[in-house]
Image (cartoon, rainbow, N blue to C red; front, side, top):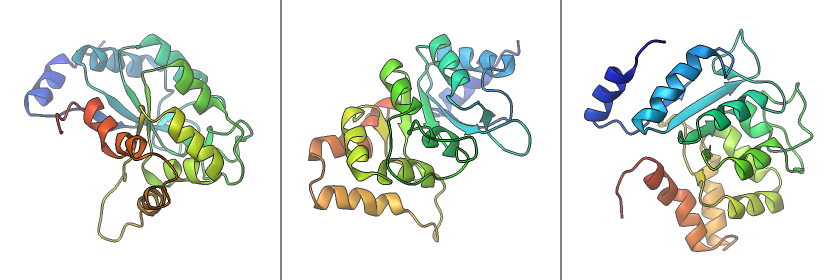
Length: 206
């Protein structure tokens, strides 16, 4: 029942436009998280979260195969924009993912899975394509990836995760290919590359 409102208000006044990356190693729907989510929703801020396969030995909130806790949270806070991130989330883009694979970067053809279902059912779920996990999800099966990017073009955000000089960013080359080979319309790519983030974060860019 901790009141985070004064802290959230102070950060908003300092110019902060979101919360995250949020990654306590607790069950996703733990009461401690639910209390904070309610107040972040009240503050009107989006929240980027990291998922882990279990409690113990990981960073990130824990959810089981099939993401039942994530669905519970999405349903509980319909006005809170959740930016989803990490291997555990993106591995569930395919229905055939196993417990052994969900903490990594599964390869091969995609059979639309829980990520697709949840994004169809919950408009407050936004996909953060950063890091190897987001890139892997949309590139491992190009035909599926193009369909996915097209269907959710209004709720996917290009991103790079951690930025440093020696970081390898395969997602940059992937989007350059999408553009140069005209694999998706320019309007769709513009939404994913910057317009969606501009809207979610309220940056006011034109």
